[in-house]
Structures are given as C-alpha cells and as structure tokens.
Amino acid sequence: MLEARRLVSLFVHWTVSPWLAEIDDPAPSLDDSIDVDIAVIGAGYTGLSSALALAEEGHRVAVLEAEVAAFGASGRNAGHLTPTIGKDIPTLELMFGQERTKELLDFAEGSIEHTEALIRKYDISCDYEAVGNVFGAIHEKQFAGVEKAARACERVGMHAELLDENQLRERGFPRVIKRGVFEPRGGVLNPAKLARGLRRAALASGVQLFEKTPVTAMDPGRIVTLTTPGGEVRANHVVVGTNAYPSAILTEGFEAPVPKLARLQVQLFWTEPLTDDQLGAVDWRARAGVYSAHEVLENYRLTADNRVLGGTKYVRYGYDNRPLSDVDQKIASKVETAFRARFPELDQVPIARHWGGPIGFAIDFLPQVGRAGPHHNILYAVGYAGHGLAQASYAGQIIVDLLNERDGLGRVLWLKPRRIMPPEPLRWLVVRSILGVLEWSDERVDRVAEGERE
Image (cartoon, rainbow, N blue to C red; front, side, top):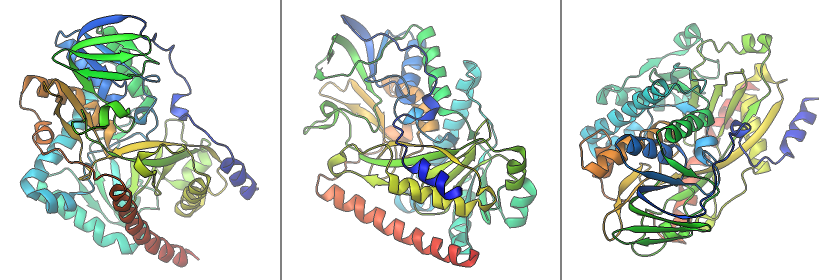
C-alpha cells in the first residue's frame, strides 16, 4: 500500500505551489502609458515591500508583474523565517572577517524583526508561529559541523543555543535531530499569505499594481521608460525585484542593470495532514522548523494544518540559467526516500504534493543590492540564496535607505562590491563542480546513517 502511494505521488506533475491555491482576483494588466515617481519590476517580497515603503514616503509607485503577485519564490518557499545569511557563519568569517560577519548577522536578525513588525503593522494573517528553527545533525558525523557553527554564533553574538540530544527531546524537537543549534529568532509561516498581505497593504497605500504585465524593453535614461505589451511606464527611478526570474533586458549586455545570478532549481513536498496519533508519534511539540547539517540541507517543518513540509537536498542547474521543470520525478523520489528515513514513525503518511521553483545565487551567497544604469536611477535587490523570506521582506527598507543614501542595517550589502557570476561555460562547470562535491559529502553521511538504522 505504501509503495502504491509513493508511485502515485511521483507521477503527478504540479506546476503551481499549493500555497497559491487560493489567489485573490488578479489586478488588471497595464493598457495605457503612465508617469510615476518609481516603477517596481516584480511583485514578490522585494517588489511589494519596496512599493509599500516608497509609497509611505510619499512617492507615486507602480508595480509591474509578469504573472501574479507571489508567483515566484515568494509563493513557493518552505516558509522558514530564519536569521541565516550566506552559506554559513564559519564561511562568512573566512571570507569577510569577524567584524563584517557580525554586521551581516545583525542584518539577518534585523530582517526577522522587520518582517515580524510588518505582520503586526498590517495585521497580516499568515499562520506565523514564532517558534524558531534548529540547525541539526542527523548523525554523529555531523556533530563537529554543528559545534563549529555554535562556536561561530557565540563569537559574533548571534542568538543561538547548542542543544544535545537529551535537551532536544526535552524541548520537543523531533528525533531526527541528534544535536542542534537552536535559533530562537523567527519561526515558520505561510509564505504566500505573507506576500498577499503585503500586496493588500501596498494597494491600500495607493500603489498601482499591474499583473500579467511583463516588461519587454527598458530605456535607461534620466527618465526610465519601461515598455510592456499594453503600454509604457515612465519613472524617475526603477526598482528591480525579480530575483531568480529576470528577463534578458535586465541581465544581458556589458552594463546590465542587475547582476546575473545562478538560477538553481529546488523542490519541496508536503504530506497529508497528520492525525493526532501521528502527531504524537513524531513528538514535535516545539513545532520549530528543522534544517539539517548537510552541505545541501534538508528542511522540514509542520504547517498550520499539521502537514510535514520538506525538501531541498538536491539542486538542479540548467546551462546558461535555462528554466527547468518545477518537478523532476527522480528528485521527488529521492526527497521522499530521505523523508521516510528521517521520520520512520510516519511511514504510513501519504505525500500529497510536490512542487518547486528557482532561487537566485550570487557567487558569494549574499544578496546583491545596489544602483545601476547610466544615471544610477535603477536600484536592485536580488540573490537571497534561499533566505529571502526575511531578507527580501526587509528589501523595502534597504531600497528606501539606498534611494536616500541613509545608513541602515542593509548598508552592509549595498556598500559591498558587486559580485559577477562567470560566463558560460565556466559558470556551468563551477556550479556543477561545487554541487557535485557537496552532494558526494552528503551521500557519505547518509550511507553511514542508513547502514546504522539497518
């Protein structure tokens, strides 16, 4: 019976995140030529938070979205609100030193506080549970990495606590984690509801939103002109918030308006809702999100209706950022296998959905923020490396500070050099080489863990 359920789930190809099952009526497409102070490209967390912050400062703002608000990563992610930034803290210290790493972690934790403030201020109902997240080892071979991360957190003053297996059990963390670094700031939420709440707040503040309105051309003069199939928008400034979904007009050419990122494809799944007995068997009383100490992490959490949501672990890259299918059936099978191994007490729980989407990575794993264009009137915030729920929600404040050249937590990002991804075929070789090494390392740990369970 279990094998039959697995096979059924593998042959269903879902192209829309289940978070987006209930979408408000779409906004109209642009069918005229308009003049505004600031035009925003993209209606995810970056675009909506920017539009909202700019409108509240008195600017006339229009948002142009090729699909519908939250169609991209903002409506497809797992919903972990975490203070994670970069690859990991030890790597940040190695690359940037302790002082800069502390500034980056201050920004990451400040992003959580800012996102929580947005939820309160605009009364956004997004199933937010401020339960924190835990970075954990599934096997003793990962203990050293977890302990190294805990020491790094202590050095830079990040709010975190190292917990052994007994402490984890006492606090109600699932048995899959044998040792972990608990991050009390943040928690888990419904990412699409957060994005739709920002959308409603932006509309209420006077922002003009045009959905199903792709930008097909840009003339970056002192007044920037954006061309769409139905009309034009002329603006003093443009904000680019497309992240892993940019059009060629934004990334191609010697003086491209925004940095070219590596577009990496990840997949998620969720189960049917757990029964009370199943929820008791897994003993996840803390309800904190979990992400593993693998090089390419696995993430798990409980949703508001008590499904287990999990995934990542395997990452795909299409040559020259070629778009890939949302769901690869071989990877769907592998992430299901990993889930069954981590949660044997839930071996009878069916998988209900698989979905996926791209995330944007810069070469240093940090968000890319800055100004571009011959008149420096194109602003951008992209490349959150899978940590955009908090950081992209903070992007509105970063953009306002950048526009006004004000200090803020985001200054640590917009003062750093722009990191350029190498061209193809070098980019493909670099990405595949890195992913290959990381996946090989993870497979070694998994083989040992699987052998011990047998």
